[in-house]
Length: 239
Image 1 (cartoon, one colour):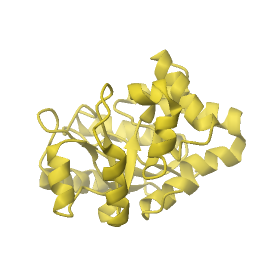
Image 2 (image 1 turned 90 degrees about the horizontal axis):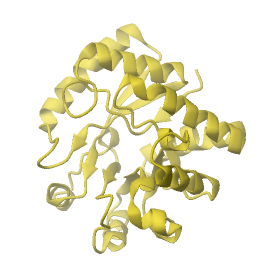
Image 3 (image 1 turned 120 degrees about the vertical axis):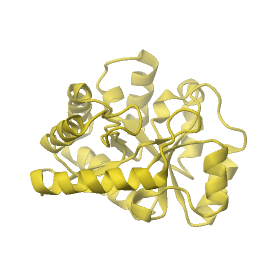
Image 4 (image 1 turned 180 degrees about the vertical axis):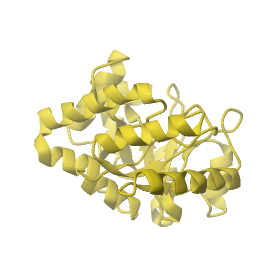
C-alpha cells in the first residue's frame, strides 16, 4: 500500500448522494485501498436544504462503518470530516467555534457555489486562519471565477488549501474543469488531490487521475499531493 491520504470522499452510507448501503460503502473503500489509499476521510455533505444529516447521526454511521472496515481491511484507517457548504449554517458554526473539522482538529473542508464567488471570501478565510483554523477548498476547478482567472486560485491558496478532484485530472467529463484542474496541478497551485468518490463506478476515473499526476510530476509529485501535503493539512498546516 502506498499510504495515500484521501481528504474528500462520500462512502458513508445513507447520508447524502454517496453510498446508499453498507455493501456499496465497503466496495468503495476496497477500491480506494486498492489504489494505495491507507487513510480515508469521510466527508458527507453539510448543505442546508439539500443534504444535512444531523452530526450525531453522521458520527453513529461513521462508528458503525469503522467497525466493519476494521474487520475487513485492518490496514485502512478511517477519519471523519464533512463537506461544508458555504452558507449560513457554516457561518453560524464558525462563529460558535464548532465547524465540522477533520477528526476534530483544525482543518475543515468546504465548497462554494460554482457560479458565484461569495463576497469577501478571501477576507473571511484570512480571519479563520488568524483564529487558528485551516480552510480546505474542495474541487476549485469547478468554480467559474477560477476557470476564468487562475489568479483567483492563487489568491485563495494563500489562506486555504486547494484540493482538486482526481477524476477531473483524468480528462473525463467537463472540459473546463479538466483544463483548470490540470493547470492548478501543473502550476503548483493545488495543495493536494482527493477522490471525491460517490460511487464505485467513479473508481476508474480516480485511478486515471492518479496515473496522470505520476506521468506529469513523477512519483515525488504523487507523494506530495496524496500523502505529504494531506497529512500536513490534517494537522492544520497550509503546505
